[in-house]
Image: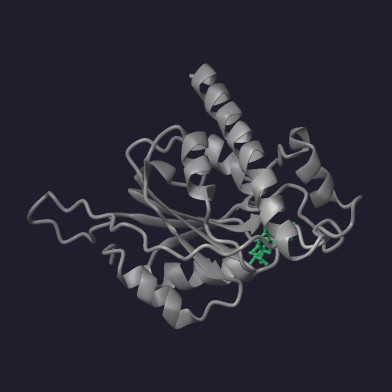
Length: 223
Ligand SMILES: Cc1cc2nc3c(=O)[nH]c(=O)nc-3n(C[C@H](O)[C@H](O)[C@H](O)COP(=O)(O)O)c2cc1C
């Protein structure tokens, strides 16, 4: 229903608004200008998403797996590619119709696109080239990747989340950041999705090495 979607999106925005000052507060502890680097939370292991109740099935525990991600500067993309490679999963890139240039991403510039969107939530409704991946209904497990922006999931992922039906899917969020943890980003996206069995997820540093990513993936029990 539209109403449900509207409500969940509103709650999401309220939730994001609620934690934004916290991230600014944390960032402010170290440096006035360093808004984008709140204190880092300890990475936590995602819960294993197994659903292997059907007996004689040779299919992997995670079923058909998709790795969907948004990446502005390539770090999340690299992590997504390693995850997909490890799982033999399909990849889907969430692409803004108007991609972010380096100038757009300059969070130290008060007039940059990203700073203006951060300050005015009504500007965060980012149009996407494609909202629903091909064959969406066939995926049982979706890993959702994004960078952290000001302590929350980078908002170009929002219309991908709110525009798809997550019911019946296991969802595992992951993010990259300079120093922030996953924080509440997964919970906020789960709320916006309005469905799906959302797991705890994982944060990687922007420069995470492949072995760390592969270790995490093998612990998910999806392969
Ligand atoms: C607008 C903006 C805001 C950011 N905010 C944070 C932040 O709050 N905490 C943090 O640790 N890193 C922050 N970063 C750093 C990114 O999360 C990090 O570089 C990430 O790996 C980028 O992923 P990507 O290359 O896939 O876009 C920010 C970066 C940008 C461009």
